[in-house]
Length: 81
Image (cartoon, rainbow, N blue to C red; front, side):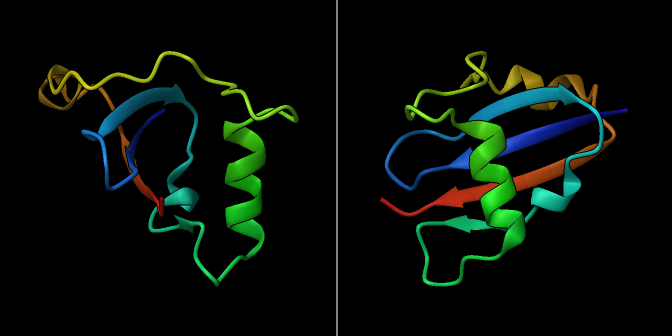
């Protein structure tokens, strides 16, 4: 099973990451909002290391990832600037 994570930071083009496993639980979370729950904290720890660097460096803006449809689940994550 693969999950397509769509990352929207509201300033730059959408970014896409295809990962093994079911990460659909991250769908709909918003980083930087007042509402911080366990899923938001889990995504932040999954996405960024302790020093603020990305744990996953193969994010892409190439929409061919969407067109290839090689995923089973989708999660849309928004980060407020």
